[in-house]
Length: 324
Ligand SMILES: [Zn+2]
Image 1 (cartoon, protein in one colour):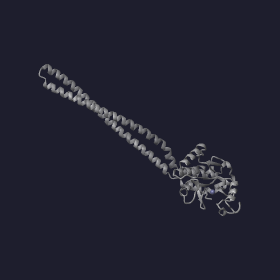
Image 2 (cartoon, rainbow, N blue to C red):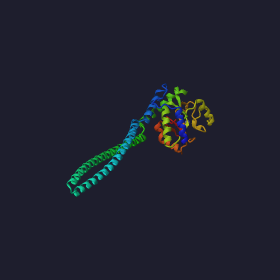
Image 3 (cartoon, helix red, strand yellow):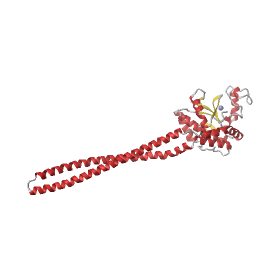
Image 4 (spheres, rainbow, N blue to C red):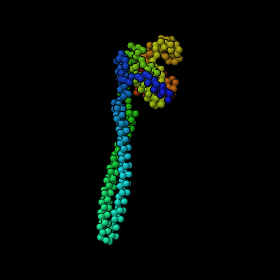
C-alpha cells in the first residue's frame, strides 16, 4: 500500500496527467471529447466543486479565529491578574482607612484630632481611588471574558464549518446523469476512436498506458480505490502486433477468426480489442490479475461505473468503456 502510494506519487511527479475536461489532443473524435467532458462533470458535480472551492477560505477562518481566541484568552488572563492586584490594593486601602478612623476616634487633643482628620481624609481618597480601580479592573475582566467567549464560539463555528465542508466533499455524489450520458455514447466513442487512433492518443496514468479520453476518469478511479485501501494497477494499451502475439501465446485456435472465448485465456481478435485503442484496462491488484472473489473486484463492481468503466463478465480483470 505504502509502496503503491510512493510509486503513484513518483509517477504523478514525473508525468502529471492532464486534469482537464477534454482530451489534450484536439484531434480526438468529438464523441471522445464529449465522453471525457461528461465523465469530468460526473466526477466533479457542481456541489462538490462548490464545497471544494469554499474549503480554503473556511480553513483560513479557522486559523485566524484560533489566533483571535488565543489572544483573547491572554487578554482575559491579564485582566484577571489586574483584578487580583486591584482587589489586594483595595483591601490595603480599607485597612488603612479603618486604622485612620480608629485613630481619629482615639484622638483627644485638638491638634491630634486635626492631624487624624487630615490623615483620614487622605485614606478616604485612597480608598475611593482603589475602589474605582477595582471596579475598572472588574469591568475589563468581564469584557475580556465576553470577548473570549465570542472568540471561542467563532473558532468552534469555523471548525464545524470546515468539518461540514470536508464531509460534503467526501460524500458528494458523482453526477450519475452525466456518467449515464457518457455510457450511452461509449460504443460510438469506440467506433470513432478505432477509425483514427494513433499512438499519440495514448498517455500514461501511474505507468499504465491508456487513451487520453479516459485518462482523467481512470486516474480518479485509481486514486479513489487507493483511498479505500485497494491498490489498483493494470495493463491498458497494447499494439495490434502484441494482440496478434497474444493470440498465439494464449492458445487461440487461429489469429484472425476464432472467438475470444476459444482461447486458453480469452483474447480478442486483433483489430477488435479495446486494448488496441487504449480504452480497456486489464486490472491487477497487489500484482495479481483481478479475480471475481477479490475485494478489488468487489470495489470495481460497486464503483467503476462512476468512472465510466464496465466489466466484461467473462473476464473479471477486463474493464473498458463499453464492457467489451
Ligand atoms: Zn483485457
